[in-house]
Amino acid sequence: MTDEAPSGTPEPLPPQGDLRAAARRVAEQLRAAGHEAWFVGGCVRDRLLGHPLKDIDIVTDARPEQGVRLFRGARKVGAQFAVLVVPEGGFHFEVATFRKDGRYRDHRHPERIEFGTREDDARRRDFTINALYEDPWTEEVVDPAGGLEDLQAGRVRCVGEPERRFNEDALRMLRAIRFAARFNFEIDKVTWEALRERAHTIVHISPERHRDELTGILTSAGAGRGLRLLARSRLLHWLLPEVEDMQGVEQGGWHTEGDVFEHTVLALEHLEPRTSVTAWAVLLHDVGKPPTFQRDPQSGHITFYDHQNIGADMARDIMRRLRFPNAEVDAVEHIVRRHMNFLNVRHMRQSTLRRFLAAPEIEEELAVHRADAMASEGIPADRRLDAYRYCREKLEEFRSQGEDPMPPPLLNGHDVMAAGIPRGPAVGEALAAARDEQLDGRITTREEALEWLRVYARDREGAV
Ligand code: ATP
Ligand code: MG
Image (cartoon, rainbow, N blue to C red):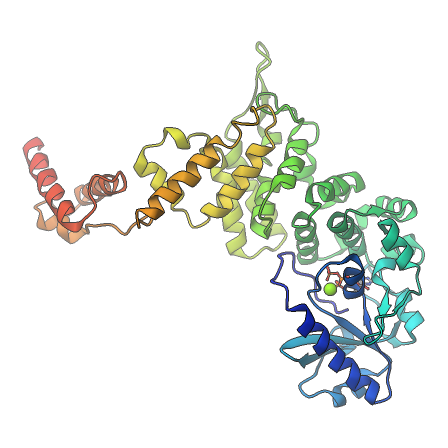
């Protein structure tokens, strides 16, 4: 356990046998020096659930200053350097010393670190399913907090008194929802009530941590349910009020599935693949609908005029507030801004469609569009993916012709001026016209382009 926040975007999993063997070697060295060594937390939980492991955390009674002497290349990290990072077999293992609960302030950090026993260590872990200890050799599991029963029942329950545990560290509220969404677990009643009562304290946690936990929820297998839990707990109200506002916004038209929020939940459920960018883009694709909602008083017809542009600007503000890197902010903004264009793809000219499909984010846009369409339940099931399939076919076609959907231009400004077109706006106009010819497939080689230019320049001369 360190103070590093988990990353929301899944990383490739390490070879499981190698990971476990390397972790055992680290444990072996601790034991050879007369210390205890246990695998702990997520890796024990995930093994029991039959999920592959992404890392293995180790706990020991050895003090960091003792541990650091045992391992070549080990570094002390974490709050007050209570954790060692030990390189072994191409992996990095976190080796933490058993700790006692310190006093907390500001719903965040313990004031100081005290070392303790394994039982003390279990008491400071967040949920019972995360307070399991595994013997590295026998795989026997030690369960000081009742985590095995909760794992069996599919339940997220705080270790100790939930009120106190959430007061100590408000981030645990988001973690509870993340684990519930990832494993499709219930949240224990007492834990849930304590969480709902203090959802507002989530504002004491840094935006970066909000970002990482929310991303973890939105990219988990139960992302749609995770979003519902965020809304029901009111964490959504404090973190993403713009998304909360989607609740109760009627849509009509193709959206027989329900209000804007319901549509978004369904879209998240349909999303594939779920990356940070696709998940945030789905979450925010209709965030411009609440502020643009209009109902025609005569016909009762509902519109959301320009919601994609208003929504793209809102998405940008939200993601900046959560301190996303610029590249992710830009990608999500772009996807939200263009999400309505998919309705027109079948009426686009070839050159327009090529330009549209040549966007660097096109694969992510297609994933978002697919999820959006699948969640539009008023469209007959066999028609929902028409635009999606058309784009896929066209991309396939452009690529199989050995062509980049966006090939480099065949002509430059020098060619145009050499053909007798005077420097100035006329050069840009000629280049744009040549580009349309190229993207529409009427000219494909430089020779054809120069021939086309000769005719263009002559006609232009005649017209002036
Ligand atoms: P993941 O698969 O998301 O990594 P994890 O359970 O391994 O799940 P980590 O954030 O890697 O979660 O933390 C490792 C362990 O440290 C947890 O299993 C838990 O025991 C403990 N832990 C992490 N964060 C907290 C916290 N905020 N409060 C108490 N214990 C925590
Ligand atoms: Mg972990």
